[in-house]
Length: 137
Image (cartoon, rainbow, N blue to C red; front, side, top):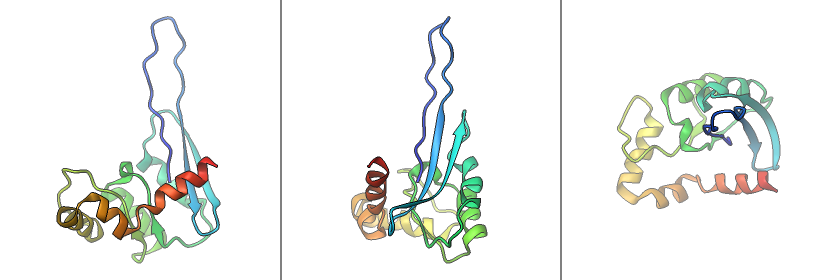
């Protein structure tokens, strides 16, 4: 799971703020944070992922991030780290087209056929909101 920040322009004469993004891996079954990576500046989610995954000592069966992680580089990194059995559940953008990732293609087809809300329920993506709530606690 990831929390990301945005850099906002500051008026002239005021110091620039340095934004940080805290990327967290959480085991939803035990509510345990298994890894965390603090990124300073404009590093994107895809850039932070390899370091975050390197800190996880256990196997991962399912990956449930926000849509910012949608991309072939993320899928390749996850398969390289955890094997082809990992279930990658990332909401594709509304204008997504089929590509090399078969799981993503199935998600696109399911959303087109049943709608995004039903896809979230069927795919188990709604579990992500429970994880975010736990982090907030």
